[in-house]
Length: 259
Image 1 (tube, rainbow, N blue to C red):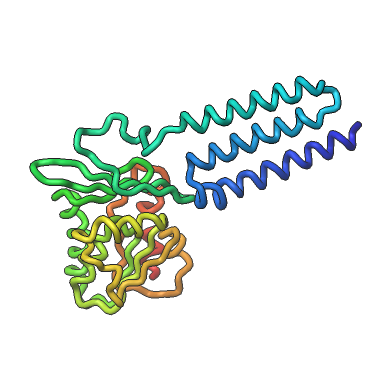
Image 2: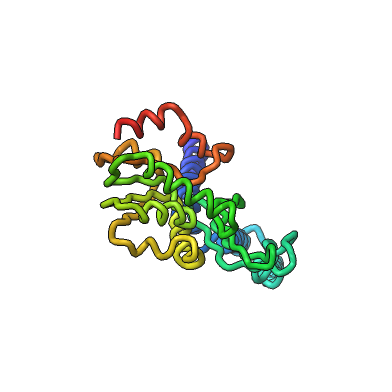
């Protein structure tokens, strides 16, 4: 009995480890959050059906009755899955449109367009937080973040930018006579969304031969890179949100100083 319990616990632990890996690195990147939940639910229902079918203590008629019930539940569940991001539309303003939606292992990225002041503005959201956009305040912030540090430095040649957003800060830096611009962005879909929907902000800076966009954690990049930079600056990343405080710590600024 003890060995059987040990085997069950071992399988349970192995399944938990594999499940956590598969969710973050396989299911969500390939299927997205919603489809992953549906797929895992169907898998669980299917496994239940297999157990019922091969259970020697279950009568034949009852087996087929239970399996038929499972099939009905599955079909009904699929029929009632919300279409066209109905969940996203709740509470949005009239005339607002969803232009982009992607789920990465690191975050969910959304681009939405909405009418304001007689024009259409676009905003880039990461996990529900506005990080960049086309309205005056957001564009001005990104430009200032790019221009001011380079105006203070006498002759910058190599610049590191932590965070890409809509690409406005990287574009502002590219207006100066620098030789190399390295931009580190944590979420791959942010780069894709900026290239598709924010060209009026970044002016296609991704295609600038001086610009090197790297996917990864900005703080870890600063910690591990062997490169030396004349200017290191951070995009408009607010410290109140989870994980962003690391870019405002004394330790982080000391790391930047060493580079």
